[in-house]
Every structure is written in C-alpha cells, then in structure tokens.
Image 1 (cartoon, one colour):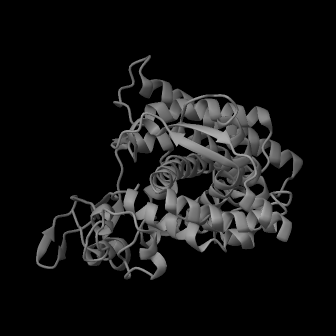
Image 2 (cartoon, rainbow, N blue to C red):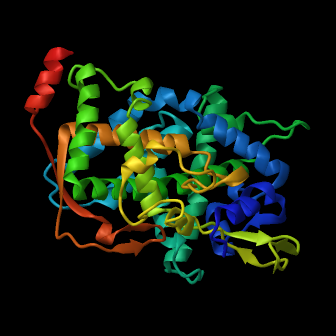
Image 3 (cartoon, rainbow, N blue to C red):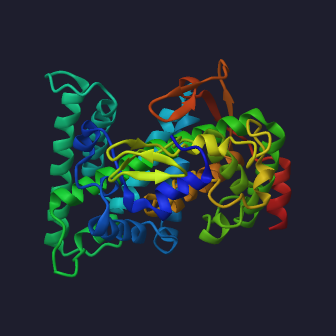
Length: 400
C-alpha cells in the first residue's frame, strides 16, 4: 500500500509499464475481458483514445441541452409526490440515463428499457459472491450480461443497415481501424460499452449524493451556491432559455464545492495494480505478482497537503493543490477518461436543483456505507419539493 503522492506517481505515471491493472476474475467476466481498463499497451492506447475523443469537451458540449432534459425530468419526479426517496438510488438512474446518452446518443425507447432492465440485474450481481449456481445473483447477472451483448449487437446491426455515422462512443468504436486495418469485434465493442457504463454510473451518483449532503449540512454554503446559480438563472430569463456550455464553465464556487466533495468523499479510495516484474522503490522490494494499491484517500486526507482535512472547506481550492496530491479521477494513462462528462452532469444537476427545488434529509444520521463506493448512510433518504420563485430570483429576472 502506497500513501504518498510520489509513490502513487511512481506506480501510475513514471513507471506505469511495471504495473498492470488487476481486477478479480469475476469482475472481468462480468464486464467483459476486452474492456479497456483491464489492458495495457497498444490495445489500451487505441481504446483510450477513442473513449477520450467521444467524451472530450468538444464532443460533450453538444449534450448540455439533453443532459438538462434528463436532470429536470429526474428532479420533477423526485418532487412529484413520491415522499421519501433514496437519493443515491435515484441519482444512479440519472447518471445511467446520461451514460446511455453519451454512448448511444438518442437511443430508441425499446432499446433503452432493455438495456436498463438487464444492466440492473448485472449491477446487483456484480459484487455478489461469484458462484454460478442457478438462482444466485451472480448467475442471473452473467445471463443478463449475455443479453446486454445481444442488445448492443442489434443496435450495431441497425446502424450498419441505416449507414448511420454518429459521433457518440458507439460510433467511434464502430468506425475504428488500427494501422493494419483491423476493426473491433462486436464483443470488444460490447465489453467497452458495458465498462464505460460501470465506470460512469456508481461513481458519479456517489459523489452527487455527497454533494447534496454537504450542501444540506452547510446552509451558508448552500445560499452562496444558490446566489451563483440564480445569477445564471436570471441570465436565462428564469430558465426560459437553456444552460450553455460557457455557463457551465463559469461556476467557480460550484466548481470548488465539487472539488472539495471529491476530496472529502474520495469515492475511488484506491486503485489495484500488480507488479509485472520485481520492482524496487526507495529501498523496498515489490516482488513480481504482488498487488500494489496507491491510496488516494490517504493522500487526500493528509494534513500536510490539506490542512484540517476532515473539515469541508471549498475555499481550499481557490489555490491549486500541490501536484499529484489531488487525484479524484486517478492519474496517468489509466485516469478516468470521462471526468469532464461527470463534472458536466454535476454542474447541470446542481444548477436546476438549487434554483428550482429544495430538499430535506430525513431521519438524519451521520455514517457511511459501502457498495462498494462510499455513500452516506442508507443512500441519504430525503424529501424533495419544488420551490416558488424567490424575491431574489424575481429581482434577477427583472434585471435580465
């Protein structure tokens, strides 16, 4: 276990070729052996470039209006008389819908529902005991995983028949050719699509749940974020006009809140690597085959880099942290390629949440549960309701 920025950089950046990504075989089987985060070398480099291209700021900026529609629909449903909701569970649905949008674009409803239904079964079995006995969560998940591949294959067939050339992740994967003219097989495409969905859903939903908790716990901070977002709300004629990409890039306080939430919660607490040869680091021998874990949480909570680390303080990000001390999306060639999309989801949801809705955590208890990522106890049960236009908003709207 490595708990210093220098050691994490050694494993993930400067000597990454000496350490391969490693996951339990049951996880590889569930996601698919061709998913990019199980690989190194040329295959990984090609796939990572494709995923990065499909999730780059230049590509995802066109998704802002569609993400807005998904966010508003989700918030309306939470405030629509459901009573107490499990915030984390609902945010998983939100991040799943955004993931589907970024991978498939405007996908037909029949495919979206089938993907969601089978993905939920896979999700339930992903962290279960990996026995293939009929009836177990793991066995059901493996069957659902096969069905997911079949659904993706049907979508690919349909695109090929209609000669559709979409600029989404599926389009990038379908159009890929390496230097030898080799294309990706349908199984490779399916594995990478399922991998991106897994990488995108729980982590984004987890951090959004923590953001809602931190804002709920600090009303002064919440009011400051509201003021920042209400100014943008006023620019857009009280929500009559959609958010723009430029506006999502101009939310400095909200951005600092997101950064501090990522540090405090440290959703990805560590990452698994395995030494491919004997490696010596600062006099210590790491034998070939040993697991190596850079501990992001320990670095993020080290008072040497973040004074009073257990206190939520968004102002600490007014100054950039020291290099390699803040790694919420990992580091090096295996860093999360979807971090810009994740942040865009957060900006859009927070904007509509604080300008149009209120929420109250129910039966509040401090505590953390893991599934496997850390989330507030019981998924942060809360009640949401729509708020009337405030006098402050009215003033802003009259000035716009």
